[in-house]
Figure 1 (cartoon, helix red, strand yellow):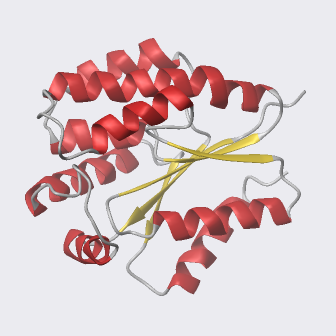
Figure 2: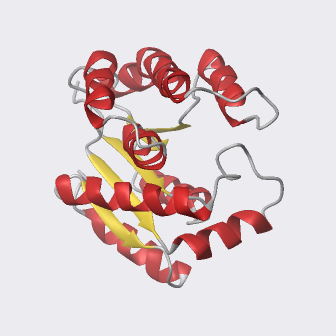
Length: 207
């Protein structure tokens, strides 16, 4: 059995992840790729409960360490019960956010120690890394304007613009450090052009 491919979609708020996730799903399915679509934090009943905890702005304030550990606790469940079984069964996994988001939000936004994140990544994931990461990138103010138009904001979306500037810088740094895996896509252009860029990248890994 050939192992499936693991594709992740990343980006700050309001860059169009949901819309483009649907496009990628439809594109891969049109090529008869066996596929599951999932998200982080979340993907299993326990991990979804952790997601609810993390995103609820009415909860008590989380310590930075608690937030980071909850992210990896949810990820551990997700990998064990969803991601690894699917990949081992030859299915492709398309995931809305993964560990790059932790480097961006907790490392960049919260300014947490990168070595701590690396240690948890190794502990929880072992050798598991995405085969391809598509990073949708747009200026923060444009993304946040779109996010506010969607309705009620969650705990992360209520952060200051400076927080998201740090998140964006951390994402772009991850792309610089991992150019073979992370492909940056300009999300501040017409959707048809975004889709064209995505298709060109996906065509390189299709069987």
